[in-house]
Length: 132
Image (cartoon, rainbow, N blue to C red; front, side, top):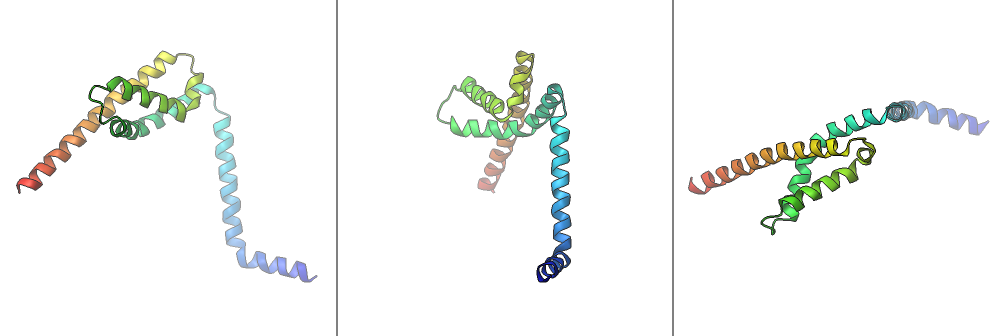
């Protein structure tokens, strides 16, 4: 009888935390089941949307890793593409690998433009700060 009383007191003292945990578990399970129920093509489209978000970070890392190599564009591009395929293994299931690689190359080119713009702005700001 004492054990039941302690259990009920525990529930009374922590019911909000217990409900939040149950809600998080239900939400997580629902999201996982929704993702697993998608076709490979839908998963590839989700991966493409995520690639758009991470490619600038991957390019920046490749630029830092291969900074001492002057003409290493192909090596950097290859490193970024292989890292994307490692991060998103669903891409290897795509029927048209050349289409996926072309998409990745396009994202890399767009991100390179953004990276060059950021570097130029930083150089200009540093130059103004040192002259001012």
